Length: 505
Image (cartoon, rainbow, N blue to C red; front, side, top):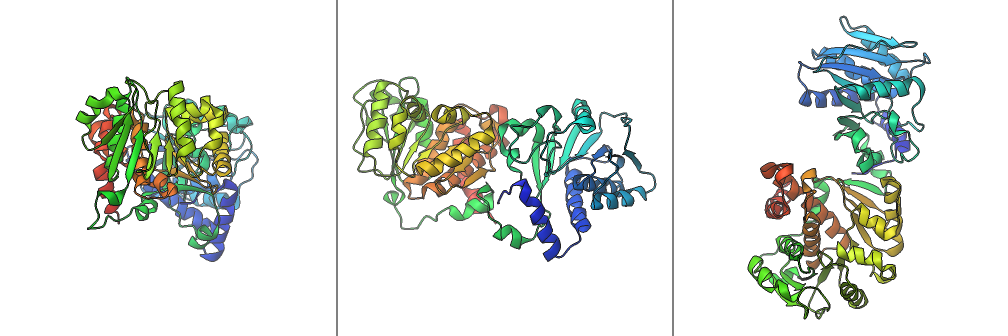
C-alpha cells in the first residue's frame, strides 16, 4: 500500500470525482458510511455519540456520520463549530441534511459554546480538522481541543486527529492536538501516524477504504509504503520436492560472550526456523556445552578464548553472515568485526553489539559492504548517525543514509521501517507491544539470516523477515498475551506464521 503526503490527497480525491465519476458530496457519503460501519463494530446502542464538527470537509464528514448514526438508531449530539460563519460547500450541504432530521440534537457554535453534560458511556467523535492542516491550532479551536482532551470519554478521530500535521510535527504545538483512542483514517495511514511521538494522538488505527480511483493510485508515485500480508505472500519462495539441506544455504552466526549466550541461541534457533538449510554458530569456547545441548541442529565453531570472540572462522563455506547478538564491544570484538568487514564476500547483517561497535569506531562505517542490512532501534540509530529531534527527522536521515551508503536499514519500532538503497521506505504492519521483550531483536536477526542464506535478496529478506517476525508475535499474543509473551514464544510461533502466509487467499 502506497502512503501519500497529505498535500497529494486533494488530487487523489479530485481525480476520483472526475473519473469514477462521482459527486464530491457522494464521495463524502461513502467515507461517512465507512466510518459508521467501523463504529458499529466497536460500539453498541448503549453508547451516545457526541460529535464535534469543524467548518471544512472533515466537519462535513462528521455531520454525515452524525446523520447516518442517527438513522441507525443511535443517540446523537452534534456541535458544528463555525466561528467565521463560513462552511465548505459539502459541509454546508451536510448541515442542511442533518437539520432536517426530527429529534436530533444539533448546535451550530458561532459565538459561544455550552458544553454537553457527558455520561460515562458517551463517545466523542472528533471531526474538527482533517489532513490539510498546516498551522498549529490557536484561539477557540485550541480551547475546544483542550476541552476534549480533558474529558474522560473515549475519543474517535475522523481521518486525522485534529491539530496533527500529516508528516512533520516538529513545529507543531503538541498541547493543541486531539488525543484519540482510535483514528479511522481514509484509504491509507498518514505518515505521521507511524512515528512513536504521535502514538498518544492517533491511538489504534483503522483504515477505511473509500475506493479512490485505482488508476490514480496506481500511477501516482510514492517512495513510502505500508506493507500488508498481501504484499508479503508473493515474496515467499516454494521449496522443491527434491531439494536438500544444501539447497537452502549455509548461514554463519557470529554471536555471544560470557553471560550472553542466550542471545546467540535465540538468533540461532530463529535462523533454522526461518528455513536455513545449515547453520554454523561461531561462539566463545565456554558456550560448547550450552549450545550443543540447547540447539543440537546447529554446527558450532569455537573461538580460542573461553568467554569472548577474538577470531573469525574460514568464511568460504557460508552463503550469508550475521554478527552482533551478545558479542560485547571489547577491543577483541572490534577486531573480529573489522576483519569481517574487510574479508566478507557474501550478504551480511549487523545487529546489536555489532551496531554499537560501528558507533564506537565510526571509521568502520566506511567499509560496510553495499547491500548490508543494519537493524538498529532508534537509540542505536542515533548513536550511529547523530541525535535526532523527532522520528520524522530520523526517518529522513535513514532514507538519505540508505541511499548514500547503498545499504538496507531496518529501523525497529511499532511499525518497523525498512529503508532501501533505492530511496524507498516500507513500514511494517504486523506485530504488537508484547514483542517489546528481551531477545526479540535477536530473533529478528536470526530470521533475516535464515532468509538471506537461502538466496533471498536483501530487500525481500528485510520485508519477509520483519513481517514474519511480527506475525509470529501476533500469533504468540493470542496464546500468551502481550504481558506474558517471551521471545521463545515468538520463535515457536513461526511455523504457524509460515502456514498463514502460505495459505493466504
